[in-house]
Amino acid sequence: MRILHELGEGLRIALEAVRTHKLRSALATLGMVIGVFTVTLMATAIAGLNNAFTNSISAIGSDVLYIQRFSWGPSQEWWKIRARQPITMVQGKRLADRATMAEAVSMESRANETVKFQDRTASNVNVSGVLASTAQVHGVDLSEGRYLNEAESDGARPVCILGATLSENLFPYGGAVGEWIRIGNARYQVIGVSARVGSFAFGDLDNIVTVPLTRLASDFVSNPEVTLTVKVGTGVPMEEVQEELRWIMRSIRKVPLGEDDDFSINNQQSLLDTFGKFSAMAGSAGLFITGLSLFVGGIGIMNVMFVSVTERTQEIGVRKALGAKYRAILTQFLAEAATICVFGGLLALALAWATTQVTKQWLPATISPAIATLALSISATVGIIAGFLPAHRAARMKPVDALRSE
Image (cartoon, rainbow, N blue to C red; front, side, top):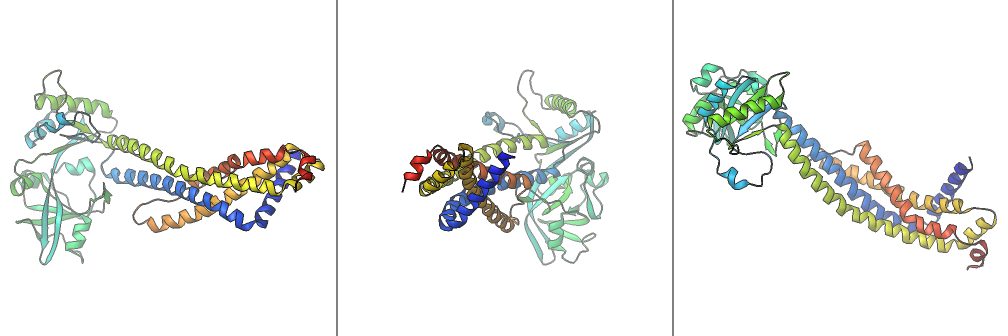
C-alpha cells in the first residue's frame, strides 16, 4: 500500500510539474513525438507490406508446384541458371503422362498483345496460354460464361476468357460472352469472364486474357517456353510429389547422374521465405535508423530532467527533511519523465494514424493494437531510462545541502 501511495503521489507531482512548465515540457515532448512517429510508421509499413504480399500470393495457391527454368529465390550460381534450356510443351506433356502422385498437371505460357473490341482498345495486355486442366490446378472462378474444355484446348480453337479489369474496359456495360474480339491480328470469341483476383507483385492479375496454349503457340509465340503447374492431391505430402516430379523432369531433360537440376520446382513457401528474409533485413535497417531519433529524443528528455532537478533542489530538500526516502524522490522524477514521453507517444500515434489513413489507398497498412502498445511501451521505457540519472541525482541529495541551495 505504501508503494502504491508513493507511486500515486509521484504521478500527481509529475503532472503538476508538467502543467507548470508547459513550454519546456512541450519542447521535450517534440523529440519523443518525432521518434515514436517514425518508429510507428516504420513498423506499420513493414506489417502492411507483409500483409499485402501474403494476400497477393494467395492467388498462387499453397498446394500448387511450379516447374520452371528459373528459381523464385536468390541463387549464387546465376551463371549456371542463366544457361538452362527452356521447358517445352513436349516436355510438359511427357511429365503429365508419367506423374502418378499429382492431382492435376497443366502448362502455361505468356505473351503481351493489344486487345480490341470495336473502338475500344487495351494495350499491353497479358495473354495467358493454358490448358483445360488449369481450371482444376488453380480452382478458377468465373463471373460469367464457362472455362476452356479439352476439345478447345487440344484443337487450338479461337476462344478466350477475359479478366475482370479487361472485361470492364472493353465491355463497360457487360455482355462480353459471345462477342468476338481481336487479340493482336487474330479474332477470338469470348466464352467467359473471370472473377476479380487482384494484384500480385505490383501487377494487375485481372488485366489478362486467357486463350488455349496451342492457340498461343500458333498465333503469337512459336514453340513457347512454358511453366508446368502441378496441383498436389489432398492428403499427399508435397515433398513426395516434389521428389517424384524432380526425378521425372531429370529423366525427360536427360540430366546426367550427379549433375545439378537444370530446372526449379517453386511453390508459395519459396516466395514467403525469400520475402521474409528481405522484410527482416529492411525492417532491421529501418528500425535502427528510426531508433536514432528515439535516442536523440531521450537525450532531450534527460537534459530537461537535469534542469528540472536543478530548479527544484529546495523542494527536494524540504521533502527529504519531512521524511521522503530515496525511492519516493526517484519515483517522482521518473514519473515526470515517463509522463512527458507517454504524452509524446500518444500524440505520435495520433499523427501516425492520420498518415496511414492517407496512404491506405497505396499500402494496406493499419496501426494494430500490438503496434500501438509497443509504441507506448517504448515511450515509457525511453522516459524511464532517460530520466533515471537525473532522478537518481535528485534522490541522493542530502536534505541540508538541498535546503542551502539557492
